[in-house]
Length: 198
Image (cartoon, rainbow, N blue to C red; front, side, top):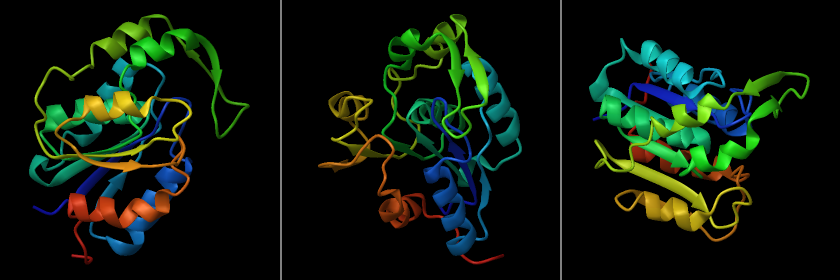
């Protein structure tokens, strides 16, 4: 089944301006113009973020949608993929964000606009826990691109979290997946992105 609707979820402190989100958007526009692409700016509250995403994809055809998520967006993408029973691609996905982000409670700045502040509230940690789907069998196909050189997340935890995924384990790399453009064709093939303009 080809993918006609693609959701991209950015990571913590990130935005639709991230390099990977921009590269994905450009690749879809150039190579797969028939695909409807959406990369929303996610609010800091995980509950609010997933409520917004759920509302946005409500009219989408479940049989032909897919989701890509990076870092915290990968954790969110796992949840969305379970709800929608759709394929997902996870880019250095966060595995234990409730644990890891507990130390980031307080005022935060956006990576792409340091002048933009947001508050990461204590209750957001519990909201993250509520989205954990690791005890559920995947509802659809999964692919994970994981860099051993990730300086933020432990690649071993990521690999262990997705035993049923098609894992692409990079020997080096970094958390940002600076070579992301090299993986676009692989992602497009895995998700069977619709081609053409009709």
